[in-house]
Length: 109
Length: 116
Image 1 (cartoon, rainbow over the protein chains, first blue to last red):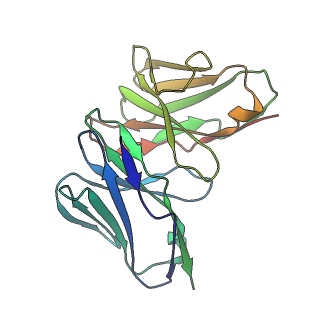
Image 2: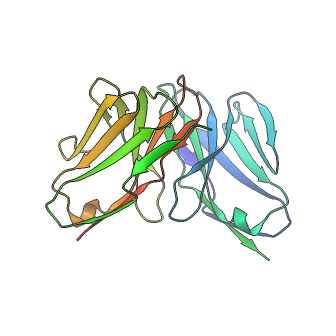
């Protein structure tokens, strides 16, 4: 079956770095997405990886290892506004997104 | 980036009535749009894939006669919740791809439906 695993909740301190991990199992693979979702709002796109390696975009970076079925989202210089849920989603061979349940990130001063 | 607009953002209706939610791609053409539902503290659940000019593809367990999807143009898809009941109360979100099958997904603002 198809499955996405990510931690339910993480806590970090303002100004620090946090890494949110995601493992996936899908029928075929056409890329891995990370989305940010603040409570009560729609998700917003953060990153898309289809090749192995690290993609850096400002304070956020995303890593993919296709052989390990593993990705992580790295957030640097954490700000209070980064408190949100972070959703990992893998695209299968039919181009359907398989969503994780999301990781709630709590930032403390 | 591309913009997807969803309307209404909030709707409250009586049990048994029907509610229509619109999803528009404002500055691009979207041959495919997706409709999701999110219950509190749960992840997004894909309900159906809306294809312009053809019937929507529904995910297993989603009643096609209850959740009517119409994708009549390249910029508009509608979701109609027919004979709504309290258990249909949820956050409904649409998304669309700007181009290709692996392009970035853009989401609408979401519609919070409350059925009394």
